[in-house]
Length: 480
Ligand SMILES: [Zn+2]
Image (cartoon, rainbow, N blue to C red; front, side):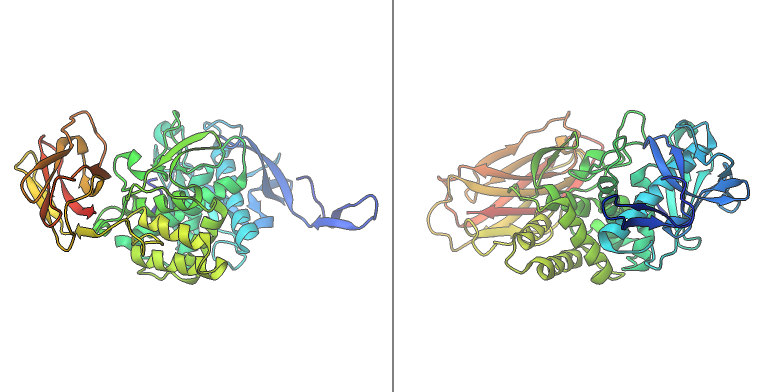
């Protein structure tokens, strides 16, 4: 079980003609289109099927996807939505059909995205529609996918008032089915984070592709599930949720897959839009990079295509972050050529989330010395240091010595950070700030160290000065 934690009355042979030539422009057969009044996506067209004197929510134009009502029961007792008017819901959660309309619509736009953009017919690629079940449980604030029933199941949310049936939730869950049918990424460790990220990445692509004016495309997950619009996850800077990771680190596979997905979600945002501040469809983003260097994106369509192709032709069940980097670079190389800007951006976006080096790393600014030894930072305890030994650099350090700091910490305001030169001179990098509740310190500081001899042992000194949150030094890097 994989959770979120987030036309007309067409009879047979009806067709449209071009008035000037009389040629058929398109035709359709026995696909009935009802009207959905959804909670999140406004008035939409839903595929339905006549049954006697009524209709049911079976989408014959999309593999006979069916939408069921479990009516606060368990997924074992579903009832196919049916009614006499082919009008589904009234836009309000109290009407049982409304969540059904949202789920059916979400499943439909997901089908259309995979079909129209990637040529994939259905979740498994076999033309068969999955099914969706709504009104699961009581106040159940989640949704989940199960391969066993080839279906997604959606709760009604807090107060049974915000069902987990928005476009991105439906697309997220359905994409778990695509992953199962392709790479089958194991749902734990780094592959689990990549499994979750795949669902967030392709759900964002679906949401943009659906182009619904009531639920516009964004790089947020589940923004419709809270009345105030607060998302469950942010792709431009995953740590905004206070628990997801922005950057890869050794050991990230040990945390919950909905949080270890952060670096891959962040990769997708950076590869699509680039770093820094940007407004897309009215939503403001500001995406940082772990190396503090800028990045240019290649556009969402290319980034999503690269991810989809990597998922379906390269990834396997145990692919980890390093593998995802290699596979997406390989796909970009196949699609656009080894010297293409796409390969450079894909590579640089991985470096920007601390997976591998930048594309043009053959021409660094100067000699680089780095420690990647993990150093635990005791809670409200004594200072710890991470040493780096510098040799072979003539003369003094530069006026713009770059000090790359990567500290994993749950409340970064607790930590005080200093750089200590070989002769013991202390260069303060970051003061204590109890009010700074952000997580992690991933910053490249510039220090005027021009009075220091370069060669010798440099130390990064870190001290946690408040009770309650701990962390560790992940890496410390000096660029001369
Ligand atoms: Zn999921």
